[in-house]
Image (cartoon, protein in one colour):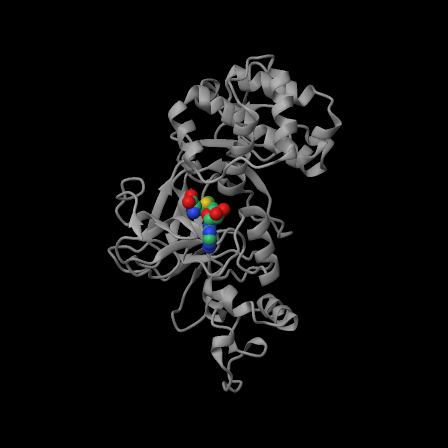
Length: 409
Ligand SMILES: C[S@@+](CC[C@H](N)C(=O)[O-])C[C@H]1O[C@@H](n2cnc3c(N)ncnc32)[C@H](O)[C@@H]1O
């Protein structure tokens, strides 16, 4: 394992290392305590997850159009301070003068404004899929980045993902080139395809607040160059938080992502995130990792579950849906009530402990729990869910009781 550089973001808690078969990987350069902040990272590029023409897709999108600041992506809570874009006022709004003036020279330049308006107005039926519209938004943002911040654009180019045959790239490349009438910089088809691949492999979704329906929808996508180095594990030892609506937007820090250790991590251990909710079953995880990220996962959990029968997979899923109170490992049914006999071989389901301790018990949430950051080196006994934000006290006697839920901050 060769160390590529001395640390990420000047923080010597972690190093980026090349691991055969996994590419670049983040490794703990010292022992990390549960809850410790491993990385705070700011985006080099952000774009809305709303389709260009919300009317052409779903009512939900129609309803939430213009609910967010187009620069800092905070909810527009004060209608009196909302300012429209001077050029495309009907589709773009900002939470105040600071976001508007910053956006006009960075994320929403006149070129972006004009190109998005042309894309919205164009009548290509093939642009009527949500996927293409969101990819078009990304390509416009990436093209703009190459003009306003060439250095960040080079960073984007350094991320994982190369050109491949991609029908969407062919269509979007020709569409954006024709709409720009030569005003687009030299984005070749190959570069367009590579950028779309980088977006697919590296973009993080900034999620809508957790709703009662349990539906997880994305508000915006961001490219976080350092957070992009984390590889995937189906039982991660770190998870990612964002605080778009609660943190300060004046300095852009509301858009930062924070990666925290879920439990203690020894020096030299690779630090991994899960690229999706941990409750997905084996076949679904393998399918998504292959189709979306191009690899076959061979993590400890997958190695165990690869030998399970379909029945066992379904039983694990059912077990995770049960109330998690007072459950223990059981090799046949995944989990069992405390007090039942414990004769079975726990190696068949070694990750039951993870679900009991680190999976949010709120209905339909499936978020991951990590302790709050330690204070004076002592680990916190309060766990925070990275999806719904709930705080729960961890009694450390095994298990987290729903009755211990704390008020959300
Ligand atoms: C967000 S990038 C992670 C950093 C990447 N390894 C790099 O070199 O930049 C995602 C890509 O990393 C690789 N990767 C992530 N997790 C992996 C794993 N568990 N096993 C093998 N490859 C993995 C895959 O190529 C995936 O498409």
